[in-house]
Image (cartoon, rainbow, N blue to C red; front, side, top):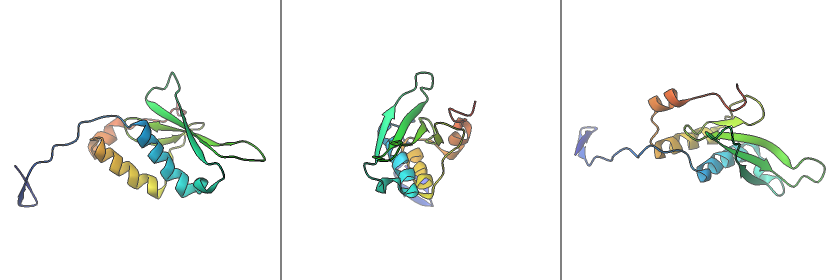
Length: 128
């Protein structure tokens, strides 16, 4: 047993630390995409890929059926330890209200405390 808020409750062990899955990386990208309005674009899709010299990131291309030009909305990198989302072309950390809420939930799910997050934060793949 452990003490919480002066009540006796069964201890819930902290989840074992793990990295963010590809499914969770897609959840994070969906949060940004919804906040940006991209999900309403015709043929909206996410396409995962890897970059050999950046294994600490999951890369996701955001696509749509653009009849007049590029089908690529953008390339993004999800930090597999922290859930930070970076623009995959320039050094820009992505932010949105839905993303922030989901990042908190996923960090809890993977056992990453606020203190651990501050220690694990690192620059994005294009910030070197």
